[in-house]
Image 1 (cartoon, chains in turn red, blue):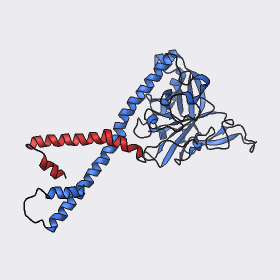
Image 2 (cartoon, chains in turn blue, purple; image 1 turned 45 degrees about the vertical axis):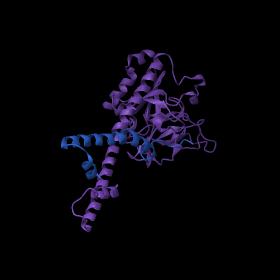
Image 3 (cartoon, rainbow over the protein chains, first blue to last red; image 1 turned 180 degrees about the horizontal axis):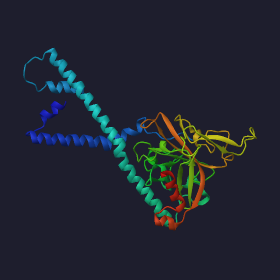
Length: 53
Length: 296
């Protein structure tokens, strides 16, 4: 997959590196600010309450 | 993802017309390897999110609640002084009091927000949240507060560091309530270290006027009895309670939901709060000395 992406990035090496950096940043931001906040409440971590009834 | 990798990696390779079985195995293994590495990186990023990104948002939300509460107090409004003192009338998510725990540092303070009957994620992200159907600060019975242990502002991250006798201070518009973690002697490990809490005798047990409650306990996630007016003693109703307690709940062990860590403290003293004190931003002398006590 990574090889395939690398081959399809246009331009010389420097430009490819820059695009790679942007892609990594985009995926990280998507995970940090969209995917994780959405998925987190469904995970069995960080539950801090006990029932009161 | 691994299949994509194989197809993708093979497609543009014009080299030898036929790929040998060895090539195919190599592509397959590479695909699996890349998938696993990717998965590992995503999990790592999730850890970063939990312990860092959630804190940024939570601290911002907490600051807002805290500032609103201070502003309300200085303009003569007290969320706790609503008509009839009804808890249900306090809007969920608003600040009601400020929590100080000297053992956790001089700068440690969190606005406690009003929660639902069982505080929800949205409330807990703002700060430690009050279980709405437990008592209010200073009231006879049990003032229940839930807080996050890791991430989301992590107000209760180091709550396991509390020792028996440590002060837990709750500031409201009108009072500073000083609770002490249960268990004896002062400075001892409060884990399953029980203090005898005075109660009004139950008709079935007319001679029992004290019952044991631990300073700290680890319980099952379903164990709501820790929040009763007389914790862990369901026989006694709020009518039987004679002392004011605070009970803090958080997750245990860190990062999991498998158990809950519970800390109980009993109201010992209280000091009047005034607008002058609130405005000065300084602690009353009687509260200030509690910090020296823990540091000394």
